[in-house]
Image (tube, rainbow, N blue to C red; front, side, top):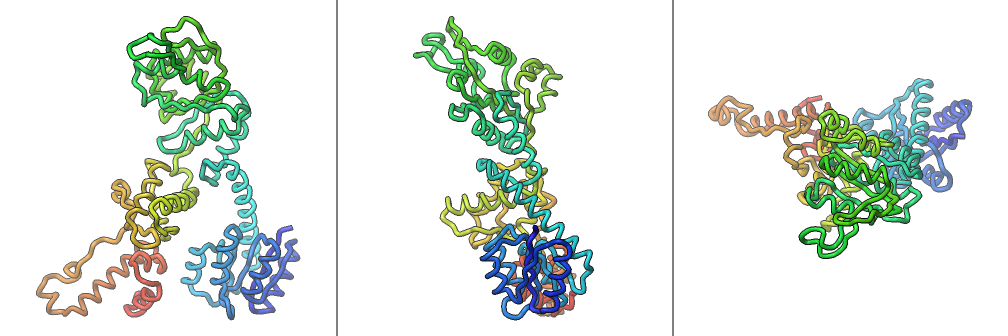
Length: 458
């Protein structure tokens, strides 16, 4: 049974909600204030908290903050008759699942509860699956599908071809497949096909015997001998030359290799995981890749989505990279501003996860405060993106027609006009969100609200 905690300092409201929700089949506990609510949360598990915002003592917003610190996955729905839109924005920014005003429609609150508890179940399932893949950060639907596919194919000996743009984490997927395979105790030997000169590739893959060519001063095992009974990971497989493709095909067909300069073949049993950022079907049509080799490699094709297709994972990745580089650089930066996060969420990341890591690493290196602000996200391609909502540079001379008018009108009047322009521009760029506009202007919310009232800007 789904368990709910209702927090409200009005007994009539607590009783009404309890009667209503018990009739709907929920298990309901109530608390008259935030302190008692936290005590109940320490004693038992709940699936959802419904709390008033305006309460004596600990407010609903303070309770929300405490819940998110201690129980970050627990959804919270805010209900009040007196909250301003700013309270709603603040609550949602700080992790509230939803916000309902009194007097509320009974069907509305039931709908919100169903949505919140359903999301909790889905998140719990996603977290459970993703926890089995510590090498890969992701809880989005797209990554859960990848994880489920890995679980299905890993125990089999089938060869896998991993598709994906550069920077999506194809090698991490390959490592996860090997870790869950029947040969996990054996080696997973990687090789990047584009990083080895053509004249050395055959030796790197199949080995060589002493004296077979200049510089071959001793026998050497190749990738397939080293990976025997285990896994060979061939990254950037689309870069192999036609000659090497032919020899690789023979290895896959015959399960044996002959070292360069050798006369004897060696039997090998290797699971192949290949990866490419190219569309091999196009390479086949262009005559650059063997079709028969493709079918040998792509027994199971697996596409890793680009970061722009799984934006829900961006906050998780940002948090991971923030902690990683704060520790590496000896800084105390554990947070990114909501506006900086909004900018990242609008960006397409052509370099994928690798680019995001670069952005955060540079941001941590440049930031002088204890929170990452938009100004610290300085990647050149990022700064020129149309999604970058930076405030335009303004000067008093954009407010007045000439220097004579500037001195005629006086400093206070011109400064007031300039300030109003900044305030209006910030509101426009943040979709009229006062909280985010204040953050963008780097002033306190109280100061921003005072200036809005002072200039009667709404």
